[in-house]
Amino acid sequence: MELIDLFEMQKRLDKYIEENNRVERDVFREKLLALTVELAELANETRCFKFWSRKGPSPKPVLIEEYVDSIHFLLSLGILKGMEDLHEWPEGEEAEEAGDLTGLFIQTQREILNFGDRQDRASYKAVWVHYRAIAEALGFTAEDVVTAYREKNEENYARQQRGY
Image 1 (cartoon, rainbow, N blue to C red):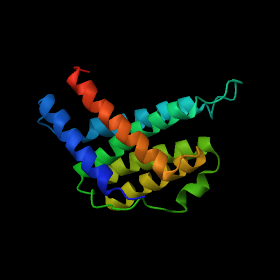
Image 2 (cartoon, helix red, strand yellow; image 1 turned 90 degrees about the vertical axis):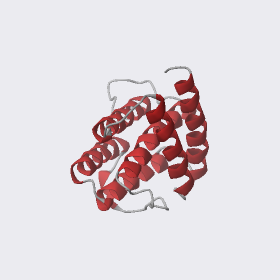
Image 3 (cartoon, rainbow, N blue to C red; image 1 turned 180 degrees about the vertical axis):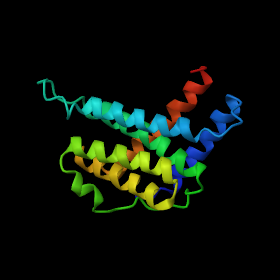
Image 4 (tube, one colour; image 1 turned 135 degrees about the vertical axis):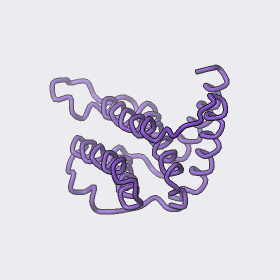
């Protein structure tokens, strides 16, 4: 999946939000925390770790919306660190070591925090590799992700206009 259009859309949204809210400081840490929170919200909706409950995961539209909430922040972090030249969604075998979906969420959380510490291209790509593995585990295609991202991007503009 090509990421060029998503980076461009995110760059415009970030600029709009920053101008609309008069943000004049580095918000890397806030966006990093937002990414970890969004990942946790997605995990919560999958219910993959809730061994004590018989209730199944949320419907696919809920899951993909939570998923692309993360993608917004992942793109935004890459933009802040000058990595928007990552044109293709990276593939890798690292995520296969995580095992089940619960393990994948834990490992993805580690990769996000590692990127927060290192802030380099290799750690940024590793986060993308793990997000790809999550998408595949949840049955999302690249087209699903792009479509949901575009819809949520529009909603994020509308929220800003409403004073969200």
